[in-house]
Length: 122
Figure 1 (cartoon, helix red, strand yellow):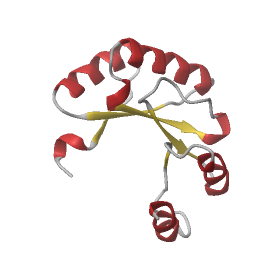
Figure 2 (cartoon, one colour; figure 1 turned 180 degrees about the vertical axis):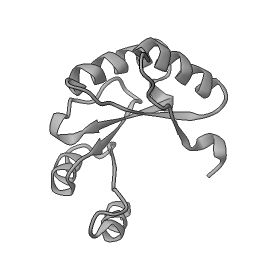
Figure 3 (spheres, one colour; figure 1 turned 45 degrees about the horizontal axis):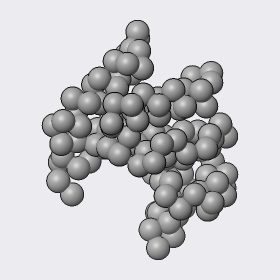
Figure 4 (cartoon, helix red, strand yellow; figure 1 turned 90 degrees about the horizontal axis):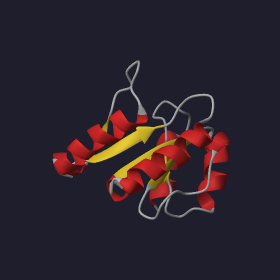
């Protein structure tokens, strides 16, 4: 995998607005990178919908992925926008089974992480 093809994570800063994150993502995508967002906060569903709309409007959806907590999962956004599901393994696997295009976040220290990665890769 080349350095340019790995997702780049934008670090959250106090006062960072969605339009700032989308603008920074645009700069990274223009440089040949893909960008990964992690949605946090009190209402992640609304944040995902807003972010997906902004990325789609900016023509960046195909070069970005958005990690969402599985317990606050929202339907997929615009075509080409990749969702990565994070949370307890059983819940993530249950939702991911119905979304073959979704990615799954596996935390390395969780019990059985290696076996789970192998099963998901198969």
